[in-house]
Image 1 (cartoon, rainbow, N blue to C red):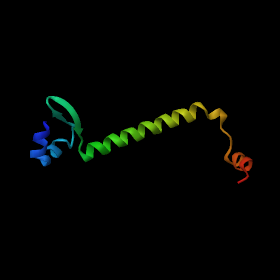
Image 2: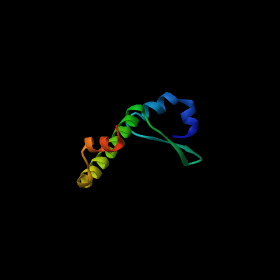
Image 3: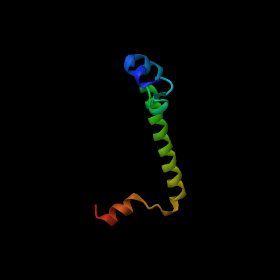
Image 4: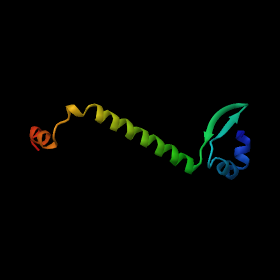
Amino acid sequence: MSISQLKANPAKAIAQADDYPVAIASRNKVKAYLVGGSLFEKIIEFLEDREDRKAIKYALAHREKARPLEEVVKELGL
């Protein structure tokens, strides 16, 4: 979609971007992507889940170095 098409009918562009990103072009070069709200939320959820999986994998790989919470609290004087 060209920038002029976006300016002429932004509601149509937003509707098209609901499920799939819409490339916004200027002089036949992509300058941006328009992403609908539901797709954006799915992307964010995917990235959060990915980070959670990485954290769990890290914790499992390093669990032999873990110490009981009570020990850490006592060491910190809390």
